Figure (cartoon, rainbow, N blue to C red):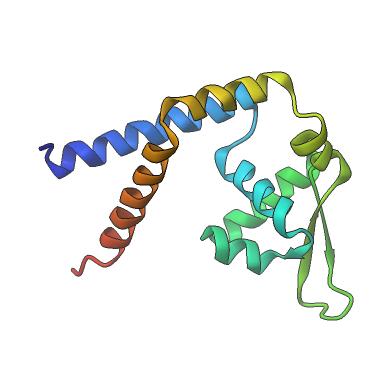
Length: 141
């Protein structure tokens, strides 16, 4: 059985490769892609909902939204009912690129990524990584 440090190193390498794949092949960071996926299901919503669900630092989330807004993927506006809230919504262009007419190379990369692990392996890995994250978060110093 692999020692924990080897396992953690493999997780780090996986993260590094995924980051490079998303940024170089898809032209978007994995975090921004995940934000768009969340908004696809929950748009419009307030920034706090995105922050809580994806566990992103508020300042980092604001930076991500600025980039997504400048690229035409999201729009932000104050909630007319509660001026302290900022509502975020996917633009029609983002919906078109994510749902209606995604770039062909995006579909090809996604298909290849999904074929690496079987559905059962994906489910098992998700369970194990969730357990690992939870355990690491609960380590006492």
